[in-house]
Amino acid sequence: MSINLSVSVPFPVLEDQFVFITGSSIDLGSWNARKALKLKKVKDGLWVKKIYLSNSINFIYFIGTYIKTENANKNLVIFKWEEFFKPRCLTYNGLNQALHYVFGEEGEGNVDNFVKKEYQVAFRIPGNLCWKRGMEVDNFENV
Image 1 (cartoon, one colour):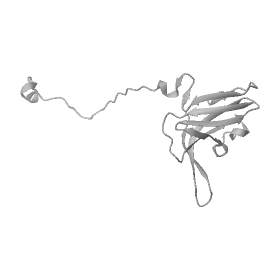
Image 2: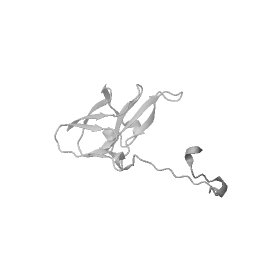
Image 3: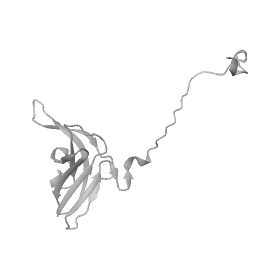
Image 4: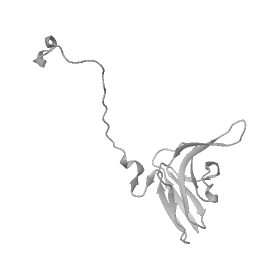
């Protein structure tokens, strides 16, 4: 069964960075990032790859780049993994499919939905900061 995967990345990916897919099958690198498949960029924010499956798989996307060193031609450096409690799952059904995902989003929404957008900061200052009687002000307009 062939699967046409596409993934949208909702943030900028640098020119020398790529989107990769790795997963539970040998074709996806068996969770080894160095053996992951590199997706092809078709336009800003959209990456595609055609894969072939013979059984159900678990997988995840990540963003990385290759750097050259003295010892090796290419070393993979990972910048960002998708952050899920469980990897994505693709069930084998024998039908060719085209599937679209959004990097970092799972199902109905973003995995970060449980994080509050508001924060409260509390400071504890040692000592006694009470005003002395002689320093109290009753009328703040004249201060």
